[in-house]
Length: 486
Ligand code: 6PG
Image (cartoon, rainbow, N blue to C red; front, side, top):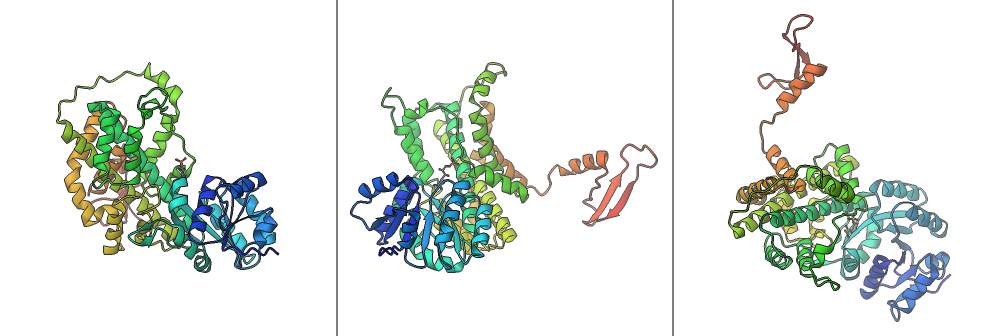
């Protein structure tokens, strides 16, 4: 039995893991660490952890015995098999009441499976989304833990101590049971994909019309960051435009290959939206844009074959156009968050998590990649009306749409006129225009389905639930409609 009795332990000393450990220790916690490769543990112990209240365990047995009961063992390893492997190694060493925490980007259904299996052994399992990258892990992430109330009592105080703080409030609250934490993190990542794509489309639309230099883009984003678009992603984009390549002296952003990567959380989000018949068109556009960007070779080949589009010269007011694109970015962002929250609400009911949108918006205000002033507006919207049907319907946001939709439409018209792909902007506007339309062209679609498949339709002048079929061609008798009751 080790004499060391650490408040918490962490397995997996990649940069995220190391930074979380240093953050915990800096807040007064004693931390045990273990890495499968002993040399990694030794390097950390002799380097960044030197002289700190951090215990470098020599084995997994040594790691577990160095933890104070109820033991809290946090895993920071690659999602999937590696997490299961570490859990299997830990199980025989732990005792009932102990807690395993997975701080990686695990699929929430894996978390639900693991939590259920470990509960049968008297162990707690907490799937905790940790957002903010390496910098956030060190200086204050946003943490979205799931798991049981009992485990929250034990790990919550530590997480709330190391999380980012906004207006005195830690960016960490208990999200809900079993996989709720990892699910909320997945939605965060989906929204992050949407935010990043929308920013890229704003950049593309401006570039195609008024050709700002990187320095001018730096200034445009600096201006935007002072207003309602104030956010981490706008802030880092502002800095990205100012960065010069050391080799050539050119703006580094102009030298970066236009092939986007994606580890998969955006795809998971879109897949789950389809499963639940929730519209997530902006995030879906973002995921597809990443896929299309990765098809670089095909796009270069096609660019020499597909007819080009000669855009008319820009004749508008430059400043007004920049404002139009800003309006389009803000309005589209509201739509994307409305869609993401719609999916959160659907999943909350489906899984029985009782997710609290005010809590989620509160802990997304700081530490995480989508942190933004805008999240205060979302928090206020749900505090004013917890049963808000859709974020877009909150008075604050309907007012934003009233002021910004003209610019939003002009920016998209410019993209279309100049042959600039703006899938996320157009998906957002399409959702807005569909959602606000009392009548859509689905009447024709229903007629088509009834024509070829006798799938029946309802009528606007008859009670809902009464279905009709029409013999559209008159073959085999009358063309009269037949009435069916659902
Ligand atoms: C965060 C980020 C992070 C993300 C990676 C890779 O919240 O800190 O969302 O968890 O997974 O940055 O993301 P993609 O490869 O999917 O873009």
